[in-house]
Length: 601
Figure 1: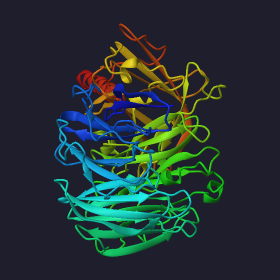
Figure 2: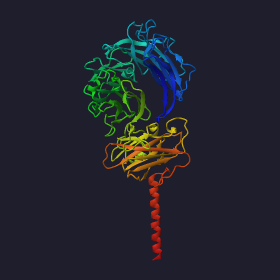
Figure 3: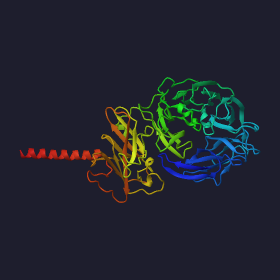
Figure 4: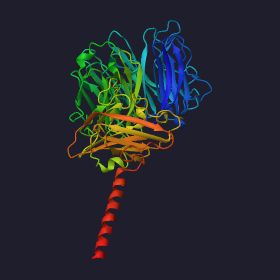
């Protein structure tokens, strides 16, 4: 059984709305692609992999409400639609291609393309455009699309489970005319339906790069560059031998070239940047073999999705963000690594965990987001098939930022993710309740400081952390006050609360504890219309990565917050303001006594 849902998640990680697009059907999966549309909307193209199922599209607003009166039927009914890929046309509409199987027996290779505008109107007729020519009775295409200037590159593999399969390409113009092709590209190994779109990227000047591995044994990865409206490669690059024919990812670098992330035969994880003339820029930098995964252990996992072992996206500044599965522990975890435009790690601790959970993390997808960030979505669960989907927004550590500039304004994003929260059901140092467990992981920093930023909404629903609903659910009223008490922190750590608009809300205050532990308390009046960030900072002359468990207790309620037995908390003012006030009062008293003494004498 499979059903299809759409979730709108804000830039701060809050779920804004959800809707079920397709009710549960007896199918193995539902092919779907979601693409941006004007006014903060999106267009979803979807088709269940079932005989006679319809290929449809619908536009949704920011609240996940359908915009069009009914879903648009994109192509005539067939024996099933598979191998779906879709891309934005640059004008608010969508260009898509799909394999339309025969109505006689539900099989056959027949690549059809279609285009719809922002209003859902079909641009290339009711029957679409045939790209592959007449239907071939045997086979089934897995398709990838890209827009290269004023041309559309269409590439498909006639996937075979028994060995290398033929890869074919074609060029189209934006009016739906096939300008060149179909033409033979080569043979490759097992493009999965969920991996094919990451095998073809474009040079906006008018070319496309096609990546594939032609040999299931030696598994070298090849990249070909095709200029627009040509059927022969301008050049071919043969890169490293892979741990598996699909253990690689390719992305446009934003300058006409491409980024290639690989897991090599020995398990080394690398990323390279190659320009449009086939020159490597990072081959002899720290981007080469920056991590290692135990690939020998993966060979015995027939259901493991090697196509998602590593993924890469480009940074606005010319660098790269790489996510990969780390299998060195008992449970695979998604890890991230980032570098600048020269292939140099953004900071000495550039490799950090993407997120945490109770099960295996795998099958990641990544895409570029605003302000030099990347959004990663992965599958999380146990066994061969995960049961949950996790997501995180990643950003690189800026190199050599002085500590005073970390907090005002705060970093646009943390160094990947600074904190995750494993459940500690049997107590330990911070038993549940009243304290929930957090693993503080700070890797961002240099020149005597280490810090990180945590979106407060990411703690909503975490075990043992009673965060009010207004922090994670749209439309829930906020309490009059919220207090967060932290336990087990380093004595020189500073915690601040900021909004996503870079406004400082409160600074945590130090509290004594009967057990001898150091407590820090942060009290503030939250707003349901504001997203918040927790900022952590430690200043030391020598400081390496900080990785330790801490406790967090959250209280909230109406009226005024209760007062602690001890130092006053909850005024939302920085500690240094209170210290400055006390110093000023002491100096005033000292000056007054001195004046009185002089007058007496």
